[in-house]
Amino acid sequence: MATDIELTDADEGKRVVGPNGDEFGRVAEVRHGTAHVDPDPSMSDTIMSKLGWGDSDEDTYPLQEERIESVTDDEVRLGDL
Image (cartoon, rainbow, N blue to C red; front, side):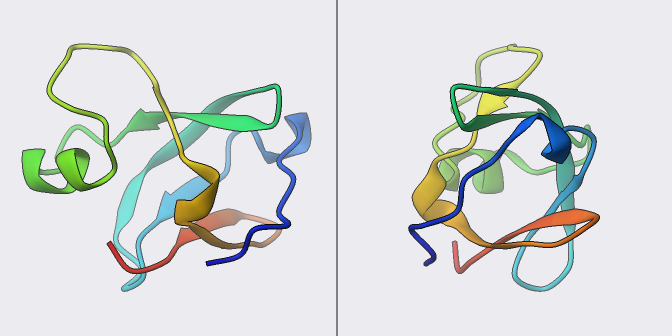
């Protein structure tokens, strides 16, 4: 995984997609370089668990930097889960 990616306010609103292009949600906010993701309602509990998001009813979840493979103009792509 990429380790030198710095997320900024400019990344808010970008889609968060898995390695196969499946959409997991959108970046709702970037706080202190950490993306907080509003998950897609159809995302399975299994995927949420793999991302370390558990099963709590939070509005957004922090995205661990080590999960991010790349950031483009319109999406944050995750590596293998």
